[in-house]
Amino acid sequence: MARLLNALLRLSLSYFVAEVLLHRDDHRFAGKAIPIRNFIIVSVLSFLFPWLHLTGRRPKPYSWGLDNLYLSIFWLDMAGNSFDLYDTHYYFDLIPHFHGTGATAAVLKRTFALPSLSALGLANALHLLLEVQEYYTDVLFGTHNVRGVSDTVNDLLAGLLGAAVYTGVQSLRDLPAQPVKQ
Image 1 (cartoon, rainbow, N blue to C red):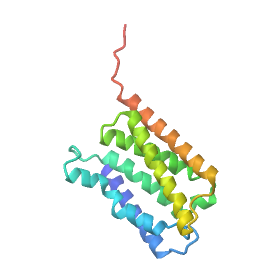
Image 2: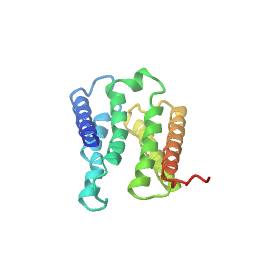
Image 3: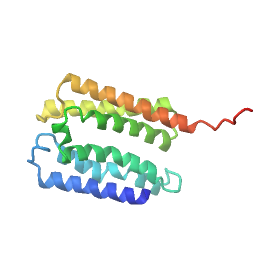
Image 4: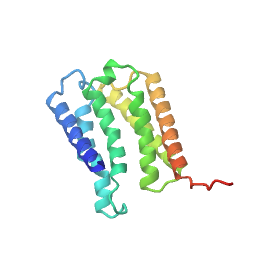
């Protein structure tokens, strides 16, 4: 089942890239630099787990669950654009920021055996860099990804909460089972 989900995620990511490249001027994509970003995601970033596995940096067997969680970060963002959720639901972007940063923290924790606090901090540092990139792409290239200071602050807060929730749940799952005292 996890392999099938992986294939579906990869196929739909490819569809999202093709859709953006074929309909660059569509109101869902125009002015957001989405074609370049989606192409980089699908052609480079989506292959992190296969690359780690093939180079021996990830123990066998292949971690389909972690790869699926990782791919879901990109899938949710691209689906939001494809289904016009960012423009039709003002606060929709908080969901990808919550999930994206949370899933990133979970993937970092599991893949690289980081302590929860380190995974949480690194995921939020990466998220901060993403927000900086969005802001400066708007300033330097005239795109319109950021809707003001409150948008950035809310995105960062959603990411912080997401990372805390995901690493907290993972930490609870990692606790050893305690025998019941009688």
